[in-house]
Image 1 (cartoon, one colour):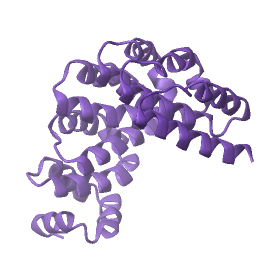
Image 2 (cartoon, rainbow, N blue to C red):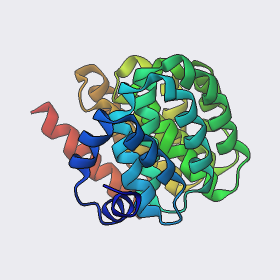
Image 3 (cartoon, rainbow, N blue to C red):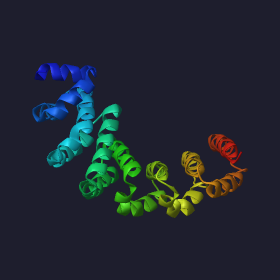
Length: 246
């Protein structure tokens, strides 16, 4: 498959498994796919990255160059499907080479803290994926999450809630330190924050009998809630938890 045929196949998403097989067997094909991560068409980038993600474990000597490329793509991506693929690639590298990912996590988090809105959103996707795959890599970020939960910026609080939901998929021990602040956010001035907090607490308590009882008790305390949005989330959450209770 020549370069033009390769690009066309990646643009359409056809023959991806065939390309994966070729790239696995032939280093030069893999390098050609890597080059297309710079393509002007985001669909080509996305599908090229899907191939790279499946094959990269065969070429550990290229981890550093891929990581460098991913950091550039993270800052430039304007398409959600591409950003999601970038996040998955970071997750794969977190499994394959956690020491490298650990070193760049502060940079990614800094992109969230001081970047423009696009970079903030892209960084959230990546951090959430790393949290799902290797939460132990995010030790220093946990401290920042605690501060985000008490930030005056609503966007910080909502981002922290998303992160904590992702963390909970790895077990309660990762989210237990945040519980006092989460319970406090049930009374935040912003109804969107309160509603999102309800969703987060419901999500992290679904698989724990003890936690479920605590959250049910906390949600029942919101009987005087004035926001229709929050009341709806509380009703939905209680129904879901009561079903779990049997």
